[in-house]
Image (cartoon, one colour):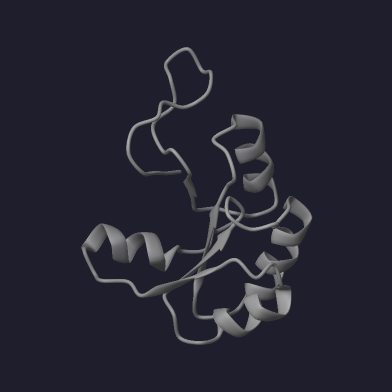
Length: 116
């Protein structure tokens, strides 16, 4: 099986500017509209909005086939929560306190803005 190319990640790596928008509206209808509005990315925020896992899953499905890459900002840097978002298809995201995984495997350090 051939995995799809993530054009957003490749553009970031190449240093190509990316234009995006934050969505805290918790709506799959809004996510569908934004995904097809010629943004490079749409951030689905779960930290500062009442977005829950199942709501984000509906928004990710609505964004399929759009021009924008979905980015999910989880509400807390909890490894179990992050894995659940990865399980529903959030392949790129941000952490509220950011950081890198500890060598011991527990939690995340608070160091700048992080992505996974």
